[in-house]
Length: 358
Image 1: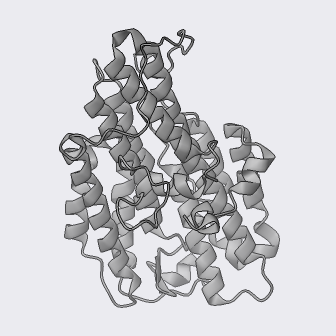
Image 2: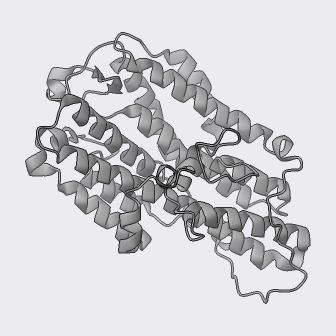
Image 3: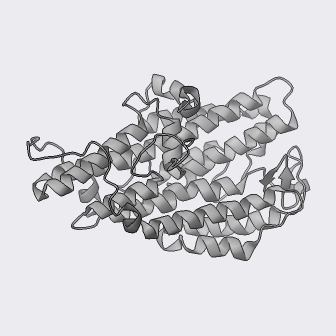
């Protein structure tokens, strides 16, 4: 049933009766999305608590972190929930001490802080796996559940938009003074050149089409399905493009001459972001995503962070000359899975909000 809902036809003749709004309706948006906003706030609070561990002698408050994350659990896919519990525990254990990123895991104990970043003993910043992984394993996963609603209402579209991290104003920027894009929407904006073809713009236009199809009548069900498919695909492609961006950053920073400790841990941070944006897809319902569990497994093996272990990503920064180019294989595999063009891959290197001053 899920596949039927998400992979409907889109060949309905366009009727003059289909009215697509020019701007996203904001009536009752906050009321319609109150539950989703509460969960988004819980993730924000959980992320803030994890960030407390970036100070060298600060211990992450495990009960508080678990309390915030508890609000997301009913909407997180089962596979990810098992892993995130162990990551939360490991993140807590690694806090409150210092870390040398050039030591072996055996020498590093439980990990610790290096250059204001908290790593577990293999050099992985677990905050990024927990936070960024939640964008797919929870927010996208909940949006997919909402897309199965029958009948779909405009309130349901509001909820999907909220889970994406956007607002009715759709600013295509995380830098504006009000209603800035957050969560997945923030990263979709960073990958969007604002030329009408980027993932953020396409998601926004599909949300407008979905609103129009619902309000124009049940005869536009196929147009609604088309819109939901586009929202889903552009959301996933934006996060995949962001994983590519962070892999590029990792390779660029570790390829510099005489890499400093600060540069190295910055690359390690970027690496963990890339892992986080990928690992959350594992276990999302089949038929509701492009990437498969087998492909996620393949990518994480290349990145030396398979979910079942053992983890050896420290080889990328401790033995860069030998191992760093392995990450190019992950970049190439992502291009194949998502059919990104060479021009798109090059554009993923840039933060377009910053480049364009949006």
